[in-house]
Image (tube, rainbow, N blue to C red; front, side, top):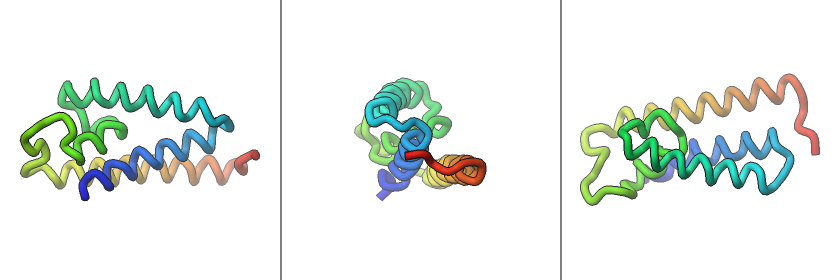
Length: 101
């Protein structure tokens, strides 16, 4: 269940990138770069500061013990915070100009 919350932040960032960059390959490439950077940032202990780390943290992907044991609230706040930042950014951008097809 925690992986879903982490995945929402990643999906929101990817949708924002797809909205801004009218290409298929570039947002996909940026997602790949963000995921690789997320693995590196998460291994240093800064997983809540980068949205691409959140799904990895929620799924407990790199550890055999539960990395969120007792720290679920900061994780959920980080997921909600990143989601709010991305949605507000999209709202501001869409109010300024419409998406061009």
